[in-house]
Length: 176
Image (cartoon, rainbow, N blue to C red; front, side, top):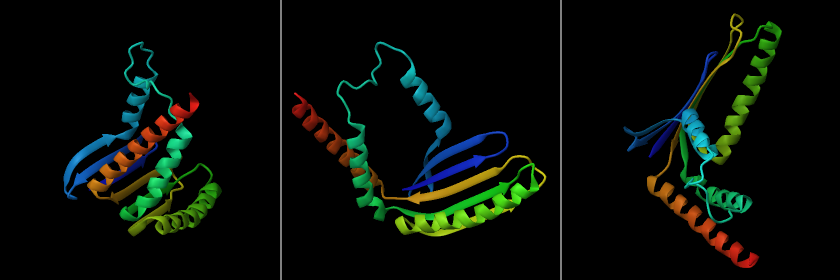
């Protein structure tokens, strides 16, 4: 299964999409993440007495984060990033600041990709950083392909749910 994350920030708007492909070619998922999370938050924050999303048991979020982190450390060797593409058009009203930002971006972004490559294997990447002294705002485009097995994704989900449920039962038994 292949996931493609596309972030595009222009002077007008932000676009953040997640696409999922089965067998690398059949598109089965295309979500505008910005709209999805806004709708999800508005649904949770809506005051409703019959809200079905409220959990009846206490969830220890710190413990859940530890569980997710441990499972992530075990399964990250099965995740590959075949391609990362970063295009940044640096612009500012001050040309000296634009040149300074250009130098900082050229130093930081390859270092960040190198550090990410130590944790998750990255096959190919393309970085394009261009200073533009005529514009007033920056334009950023990021494209990342992430490959992982579908069965692994399902197993990770089951492991997380099982361990959180087990810890929730343990904590409710000890707090009584």
